[in-house]
Structures are given as C-alpha cells and as structure tokens.
Length: 349
Ligand SMILES: [Zn+2]
Ligand SMILES: [Zn+2]
Image (cartoon, rainbow, N blue to C red):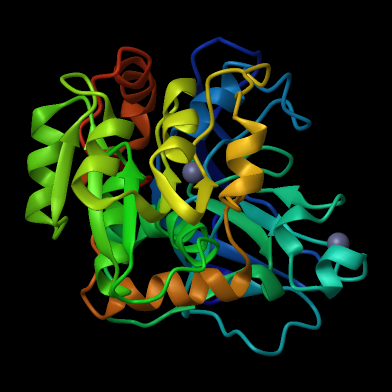
C-alpha cells in the first residue's frame, strides 16, 4: 500500500465517557510522526483489560475519548521520517506496551514493561478498534507474511503475558507447574508450559475448562470447587515447583503459594476486578520454605517476539471467534456477563 491509497477518514469504536457504550464513528486517519508507522488494522483482539479501561475500573483512562484495543495485527501503510527497518506492506503486531523511555534504570535493565514513563496502547494512546492506528516503529513486532492476523492477535497480549509469567517462574523442563485458572490466559499458559517442557497440573472450577486443559497437554487436573486445591496438589505431587495465577479470584493467589513445594515460585499475572485486593501469606512459610512470590506485567519486546515464535511454529494457538467493529458492545456485554468463550477478535473491514 502506498500513501496515496490511504483514505483521510476511518471507522473506529470510541469511548467518550467511562461506563458508556462505544460509538462507531468516522474519524480522521492519524498521521505518523517521525519514528512512527501508520498501520492498517487487519485484526484486533478484544481483551478484558479493554473493558476494565472503558468501565473506569482503573480510574479514567489518560486518553479520553479513547479508541481501545491492544492486540493488533496489521500491515504497515506508511512510515514516518527516520523509520528505516520497516517498509509499507510488512505485517506487524502492536501490544499493550506502546512505548517505553529507553533511558531509565528499568529500561536499561531490560525490564521495560515497568518503565515509569511507559505508554499503553488503547489506554494512554489510541488503539486498534479502528481501521488504522499509529505506533512507534521500534516497539512493534514484525510478523511473517504467512501469519493469520486473527489467530495471532490474542498472542500479542494473552500469549506474551503468560509466556513472560512462565519465564519468571524460573522452572526447568520436567518440573511441575500449577496453572490456576484455565480461561483466556490459562489455556495459553498450559500450551506454553507444555512446549517449554514443564509438567502441568491445571486448576479450575469448571469441568469443561479442565477437560480443555487435559486436551492441551496438562498431566493432571484439580477441580477447585470440589476439593481443597492446596491439599490435593500437595498430596498428589508433594507440591509444585512453580505456579502461575491467571484467575481473578483473590483466593487463587493464596492457593498458588500454598500448593508450592519448598523452594517454589508463584507468579501472578491475573488481576482482580479492583486494585484494593490483598493476599495474606504465612511469613514463617515464606522464610522457612524459601518461597518466592513474583508479579509479572505483560512482556518486553523480546518476550513478544519469542511468544509469537511459539505460535508460528504451531505449538500454541488461542481459541478465537471473529467479530466486526459493530459487534464490540455485544462482546463487552458478554464479557460483563462472563459468557465469553475463547477470544473475540474484531476485523475492522
Ligand atoms: Zn490484553
Ligand atoms: Zn524507561
């Protein structure tokens, strides 16, 4: 696509006020600044975080009116001045981490996801519920021409988040991992863990989700509604070497610590519906058993390329349902009601 093919206006789903439905409008196509690219959106995953953003669960988003969406697969439509490593026509992915400063102590240490100056796609910057968006060229993932944009979109958020969380367990092949919650993140966590050579015990309250975990390679499953999951995992395996929490229920975060064997590491990637929830843990257990509890926040650009690579090799695939821009309020309604099966991915054209 050459710049002459780019229209002057585009369709976008826009949040004007917290908690109100998105409105589908015709708005100007943005212009890439130096160092930025204009991307034609081919697919954008609809993530629960988008709903949290427009419902104001994290306070009012810094950018209002807001075009949400941070799981964008698209094609470079135009390059701003100074962009040398990308060309119009190339496929790229845009994730939650839109930009980080590159100069603070965390960026310098390769922990750019916790940069205090970071910008977030579809939260502090316009996102992918639109026909076009702009993004910094240095922060997009390059994708091969063979990729299916709809299939890859959820990998750009749910995939990279679970993958980084698994890396942060520090587990080695053959060790046991507990996956708490087999939803959008959890069903990917099982697949990444299996691909990384870990043995998985999956925990959920829904028998269908446990059956899914088994079909994806989990070696054992525990129904947390029918049995005490901490006692069950400790009896079954003597505890696990690591655990990853993708669920939102606060109890799961405590169970993830309780079911570890001595020396184990729990990693939290799920977020409860509000930011006031706390956990309680036995101090003597943490000290005497040398238990580690870590948070993990989306993923770096390197995590993103690695997470995508697993999907390109066919080792990881999200369950997706394709919808249009006009369906976004219905998808949000399904999310509020807990009716979402797999990941809804919108195609704006
Ligand atoms: Zn997301
Ligand atoms: Zn920084």
